[in-house]
Length: 48
Length: 143
Length: 229
Image (tube, rainbow over all chains, first blue to last red; front, side, top):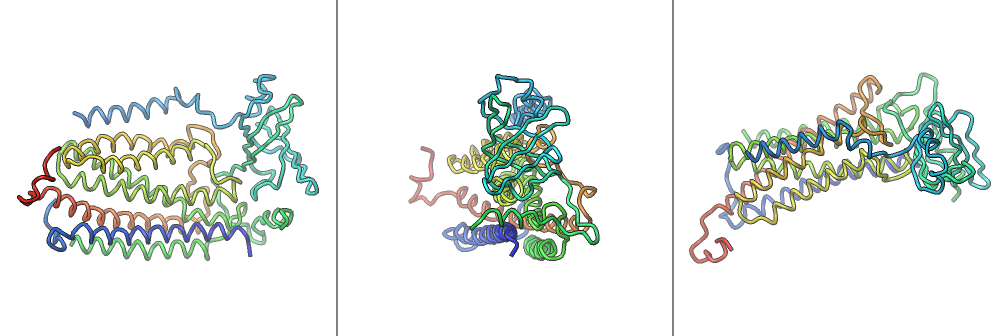
């Protein structure tokens, strides 16, 4: 196999893994942030 | 008011750097002409040297892993010696930046060789193979 | 409506990214000079654009907060800075991975690399600073000033390849890149732009939930910890 594909593969895997992990962390932090203040904060539409 | 001051500082810094008062001190590499102008003062001082590889000057000796080539900026020329397999992109068509010192003999002893790439990306012309430099280099790399 | 935008940007971004990266990896022509390593472009270049756009949003929000004082500006400034930092990190990482096989080194103190690294540190500092200030209003104004100052480096990163000679090539244009490659690059760039907006919206939600808790009047029993120190 072309050895330089390994760099390419590593780069693309990194991008997808990091973006995926960030998305998961956002979900977790969202849950964390709305906990303790009386369940999920319904905030649709209101506010600027 | 704070916003205005912060903005002014921000814009001022950009203008200042753009006008080159800082740019003159921010030299990433020297050209062969810069190095030549320094004369003997450049001997033994670690610097980065950048320029084009002179066509036909590449002398690669796989058995000793010695690489010799000439870096030029069109006018001045500096002979460079480097140890080990060069990166994939190393070829006569490319610019290079080498880190190292120039010795009293006028040969630049490179400890780090970097290949500069342009901003052009092209498919090979019909019937032309993409460059596969790495094949020859990787073989020479050994196990 | 807001929920639809959030889901929509996420889905569109994901589909476009799969398309752009898929085509870039398996359909775009192999570069004449660099060979297959050039395919790093579709991963690396869009992270740079996206990071800079995110920082620009943060900068505008910082200015907006100082002028209008509405909490939403502060929340957007924080969210966009954090998302920008994620893309900035990816920018540096993919750049190092691309640099090794082409330049021969992962890292060198080239002006472009240095200024992009400084940008990462500046916004890392901005986000760290926010954690040190407890009072939300003080935090928001201080962060806005720092956020404005930090952004000064962003245009420097962009122009660094033109102002100073370095190892990094200058910006490519559609004229210097073959059309199939440009298509893959555009798809990946729009993909990351959508994902960036998606992440910022989600991050704003988190910030808002946290802020609501901070601003809520403390229960009488717990008044001890809520007041100034």
